[in-house]
Image 1 (cartoon, rainbow over the protein chains, first blue to last red):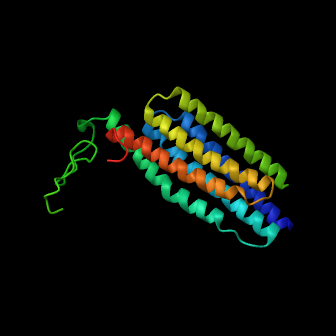
Image 2: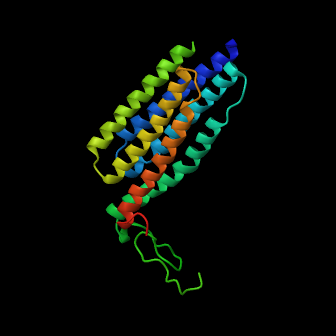
Image 3: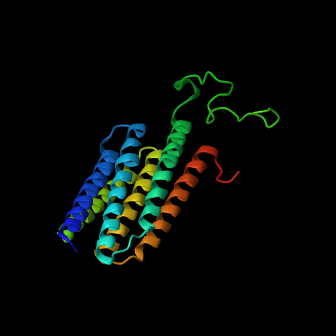
Length: 124
Length: 89
């Protein structure tokens, strides 16, 4: 393996390890739940992305063919991380915050976690 | 050089898993525990991929992909259960 590939892989591994650790330290250190939601969803996703980039460069340099498994895993993680964060925030709001703690939606319908869904008969 | 970087990254992710475990034990809300479990799954994917690089074999990517899918589905199912009291309505 060439020295350039080794340096690239090592750099990506070290940076991704630091990012993963920062995400989990933030999960322990931040004060309340909605603040703690920030650290793992962003820093840890970036850390895993770095690991997968390092593994892509490593296997390309060692065997000379690009593997797309890592790209699939990265794509899946980056697609699902915002969805899980949104679900966790909704679960926290439904359990700990009330109708009065959030601003009005100023729309036709209220918040989906506090109000009933629109009836099936309406045209929207 | 890659061996040292790999050892460093493996140590970082192992420490991250321990910190997540502490958050699961302490809580205080159920949302915190779901978040810590989701972070544990993501850190575990990183550990599995690092193990695959350590042994320079590509058979661990399928395992990482499966862990990613199962982790996402379980997080969403747990949140749905807390939100609606039911998973599939």
